[in-house]
Image (cartoon, rainbow, N blue to C red; front, side):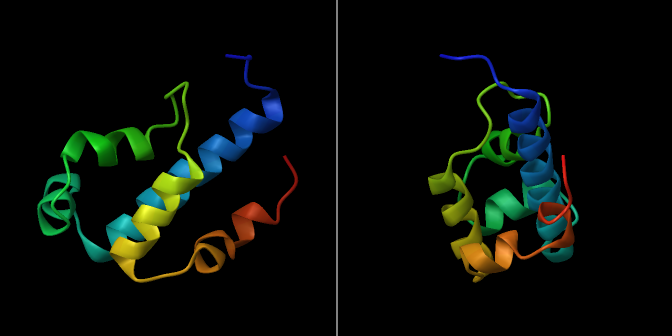
Length: 85
């Protein structure tokens, strides 16, 4: 697997921060969120991690969006994705 570029790392961090922000709006803890959506808490932890080398796939982001009943457009329609790296 190729090394992540600086730009990739910045995007990965923005995605993780956005997931955490949206999750916190619906649930104060990863455990509660995971139970409510019948997934493993470690998955949420990995999605929110800014240190995970793999990052989050677009399929995982879409799955997260469905849990919150939002679209991918809603997910990425945030000021943090309009900022330059």
